[in-house]
Amino acid sequence: ILVTAHPDDESMFFIPTLRNLLSADPKEMGAGYCPGESPIIQVLCLSNGDYRDVADGTIRTQEIYKACSFIGIQNPQTIPKDSSTNDGDTIQAVTVLDNGRMKDGPNEVWSTELIAQTVMEHIRKVVTSIACVNGKLAVQTKSSPSNGETQSWNFVEKKSMKEKPSQERELAQSINVNLLTFDQGGVSGHPNHVDVFLGVRFLVNEKCHITRTDSESVATLRLRQQQKVNTLSGNTIDVNVRAFTLKTIANPLKKYFFWAFVDLIPFFLVWLFQGLRYLIYFLLGGFLFSKRDHLLVSGIQLFTRTKTTSDGNLQCRIMNPYLVWRAMAAHHSQFVWYRRLSVIFSRYTYINDLNKLSIDTPPLEEDDDEYIASLPPVVAIKEDKSSPKFLFTPRQMNALREAVIPTGLHHRPWKRIYSLSRDGDSFIAFQKLVGEWNGKQGQQSTLLIVKTIEGELIGGYADVPFIVTASNTIGSASRSCLFRMENDVITVYGKQHSLCSKKIILDSTRRIIAFGGGSTGKSDEGFGMCLEDGFSRGTTARCEAFGNAPLVKGHGGVFDVLDVEVWGFVFGQF
Image (tube, rainbow, N blue to C red; front, top):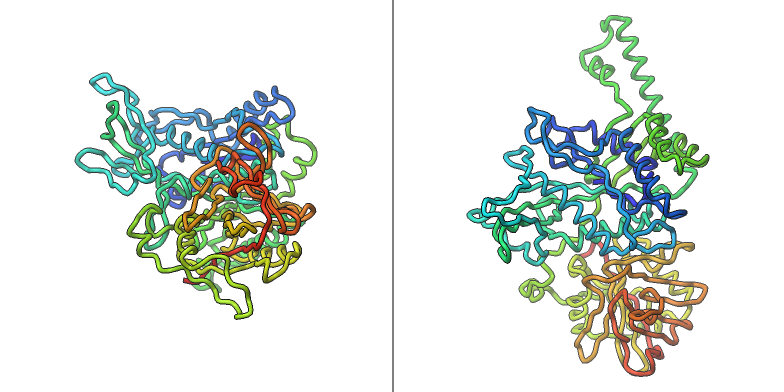
């Protein structure tokens, strides 16, 4: 399932992958179909592209249908009942949504929760039409049971996934679903693209049940067929979800020019050399070459292919710019001059680099009491004796880990990155220390602790970097949360979900750090927590994104800061 933000994304960026999927051995991609059958490829576009005018939505919807037909994705698509025949049920292969909460526009913020639920609903519609039975596809009957009661398929709650299906009561089936979308850079940097990535990541890490095998971690959704009202018995389908993200090429020179010297020209030189050797072999009759050389010169590599790396990442190549041109030309309303140049020169016309989305792998479920009891105490990296003491005790550290930190980080040591009393109130020093930390592999998550003059401890967990780039300091963080600690009792806000996308804001001009949307309304009175004036004061208010009340008592949510600490979780040390 290709998940995009706008009509034309599939043609502008993903054609090398789609064409290789249409021609590749399904086993290579782990898809839910059998060799010899047509691949089941879905395109889910989350908006209809009506940014400039409402009428554009209908036009662009028809354009994506036409473009996908050029690519080879016919709409509707037939799911075969039997590989020996062409008979089967049909499903919509290209779905374009028109949701008022996911409108096209660079200033629109799409909820990660809504995106995850939307993709899950699409998975439910597709997967319940098909199932793997003895290695072959079988279409689930849409007819009602003999007793006249309605059948329905619903997702099982993540917490209930520990319980395995009873083989006596349920028919357990399994299907693999690959999600393909943008990475955290959004490929072109469009905010809607970034939000799609965050939504897919939220689905995989928060909505799926995560299990660890010897070789990899598996994210699974479970569908159960409910045949009777208030009855949970029935067939189940385990949907194994993998997500691949298209690598962003931020440097425009590399994206449109230098890539040819790195990827294209060397391939053609090797190809010409191999072809020359083959020609010489043919002219000489092969007498001057050994059998091994014969195999070498006859095995000329094709440019169009899919290559899998040892870490599960993929590279898809295609040499058909005419196809990309036709597909983009089908988006007539968008095919302006600079997009025509992009089709010719862009690396995405010829090569897609796909990275497998990493999965957070908790040892056990977060609510497992035995797991929490078995955790060793938090290990804090020691500092010089002259350094000020930490703002919290080891006991409070352990309580914060259990209540606030995702389980995937539970076994990592903690390191104090920044301390107001140790490093001073310079915003530049804060940016330097935290920025260096966020720039290292696996060290994007941080914990911000604030101690007020009144002795209250409040703070927030951020699962995206505070320091991203000099020009882009705003991030949407689905698993971020706020908390306050009172007498070792921790109250957490927004950890499970939010009504709208969360934001972590760092504004170097105004010298503020804030959690939340910062808008005002009936249920949103400002930032959930904001540090201002060089960390000397702060504010806290009711915030819709985190669902929190003011984190401090009295004073209208305004507080004076005594100390601030930023903690990180050391990657690669256990």
